[in-house]
Image (tube, rainbow, N blue to C red; front, side):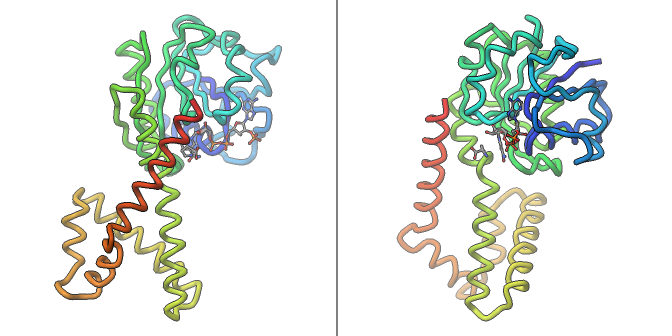
Length: 266
Ligand SMILES: NC(=O)C1=CN([C@@H]2O[C@H](COP(=O)(O)OP(=O)(O)OC[C@H]3O[C@@H](n4cnc5c(N)ncnc54)[C@H](OP(=O)(O)O)[C@@H]3O)[C@@H](O)[C@H]2O)C=CC1
Ligand SMILES: O=C(O)[C@@H]1CCC=N1
């Protein structure tokens, strides 16, 4: 039985716990440390072994084999020195926190740390997650981290920790870009005379169809060509996207801003 402690069970922590519990094929004993978490919000989460308000709680039943850090990056500095209360030298620390470097997590103790960057698709098993293994992470540690993160979607490994800033800018924050695009497309549809409800539904379902096509044929350029009839409506719209390289420049500016913010969080 592998004993896991999730520090922070908000959106990301809850999503991972819930997928681990519902898949049920790993022998895991899961506890939560989150002062604001209460049972009754999600039936899967009610199956956790214990919920602790703080890492210093007298009743805490440590140590744990795996600690998952799923708190806000800004909170980590306040909790870092308490990690030793729930770990041994063999514990694996898996972080989903944006920006916080492996060195910062290992600052108070030589933990084996796997840093990961999932995304909000985790809740439905559709996260795109990239991982980086810090010093002394064993092959068994990498395999365990992969098995855990595979429960929420696809898993990729990067060899250079600095690349996690770019990963955050592309796939960590990425879902929000598509949500913003759906909002913009729905608003544009409204301006063209559709009812707000119909415009929203068409925009949402269109993202769904694009995503399903991409899942089947993982080639966005080919798919774009398949939709674009010569001198047709799509060509007219895409010409507006590419005029002065507008879309590329906008996406480049946005991802550079996210990359820079991730570096600031270090
Ligand atoms: N949301 C996303 O799409 C993604 C998030 N991440 C990363 O995941 C991490 C968590 O983000 P997210 O789940 O969105 O954030 P949430 O705010 O939803 O979750 C953080 C949780 O930690 C709780 N918490 C607060 N104080 C403590 C404490 N002292 N001890 C333990 N838990 C505490 C919070 O409670 P309360 O809210 O009541 O303060 C909350 O439940 C972040 O570091 C973020 O960078 C990574 C990829 C994608
Ligand atoms: O916005 C953030 O900082 C976090 C990291 C990636 C997605 N959400």
